[in-house]
Image (tube, rainbow, N blue to C red; front, side):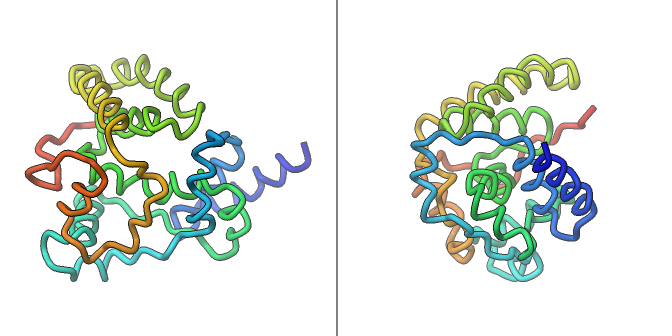
Length: 213
């Protein structure tokens, strides 16, 4: 109980942190999501791995590079990278699953071709569930399958289409969660997509934009 109280206090303290990843990783740590043991073994080479992501720097890379496309995706969707403060290094190392899932979430959106609507979110969630990262993600997907069409009825068709697409991609793709994306910013995004066993998308950005309700 005392540990939980300490976690809650830490969560409140970092709620308005300049590093968006702080709140996310503390929240995951509090909820105690259990990673699949097989997946945990595959993540040992990224324990504590969270290089700072500078969007301004990435935006200067040539058009078509992974870093440039990621920076443009973040800017167009008014997003900031989930950087982690040095003070949370112990939590980052202890909970490698939460760390990498938080840090790579927006990268997944870009590479999988899912936007940031409810329909896009369920696509990414379905992908992660299909890759068998964690039982908790499968439970989250089950809940989202029922809740998202209610929350965003106009996206109902897209929600179920992306659900199926995410599951299919997750079964065919390489293991994405353990990939050191941050070491490949300067490479063409199409090469990254091909290397990871994902289908090419004509435009790294999204052809459809949904309004969230």
